[in-house]
Image (cartoon, helix red, strand yellow):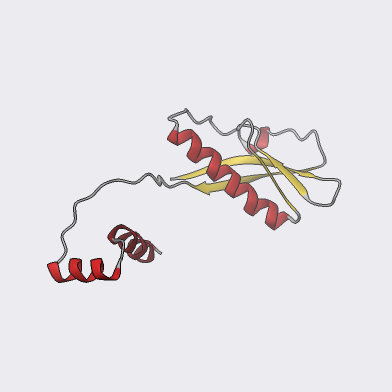
Length: 123
């Protein structure tokens, strides 16, 4: 699921950026450059949202970026995050006996092989 929240990119004293999300208490990040700060902000936003969704906490409505008033030197920007539910689920699958025997002999984890194969298909 895709989420978009406004973030404030504040100029830090060392030349980098400190990132905060006005709607997400305790969600902060930083970066040495604008692109690094944006990358780190996406990561922080994703983790914050995944935690809330896992704990079944309600997500706050994002403030319109036009409503953001900067009290520091910097700029406001929208940050997006693509959040996936990473919780494991059990599924029953069938494979030919020879595949089962050979994968056991090789010490393969069928769950891992399936996950890796599906991840490649989804790219």
